[in-house]
Image (cartoon, rainbow, N blue to C red; front, side, top):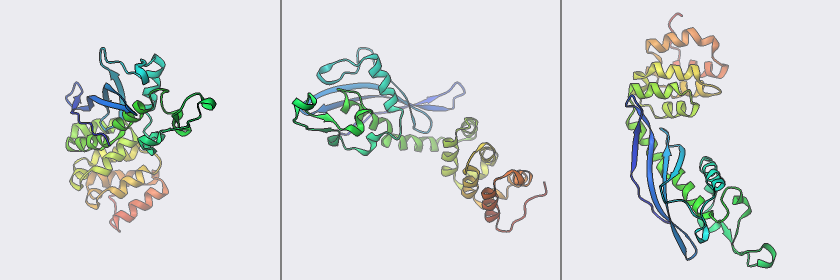
Length: 247
């Protein structure tokens, strides 16, 4: 139920194009009646995906009883944060630890539940949980919204050059009808670079007007035979009887 507010800085590359986001976060972490502060730097890519973290000078991370993180702890934390599908997403904070009250059996009370044990650092369960949710929570969607607002031709060209399938999906799922026409060359590039069902999905997302643009007509007329069967079917259904230009 804690709320953490922070400002995010927009990062740009040498050409002045969007290159990602970063922020400095200060947040308390409480385990029972013990609380301690975490100060940390986070960085995300253009799609709001976690990239890396760093500590501030003199502000190293600690575990229970203020035991400092070891180098292995820091390395493991990055691995934990880098997993967008972590099991931590499925748990509430109060579910992370169970009160065993059997110290003679397990050596301690308040044992980390088995399912999350490999996804946290011993003595830093709540720190890992808090930081993972900060890295992958609502901030990710907010950053994607910010990127949408910054769409322009140079940035779209940069995104297409990544040849990152998730970036391709981000583009076709967020372009307006006008942007499909404005960036038709880049859309066609994603189709030629895309793998699996991406070409089919891209065509299904394209408005019919974009398919009638000469560049699209020429592209599909030339490469129709190279498209997969389901992609061909999707294209023919989208054309609704409209003929392609002669290749």
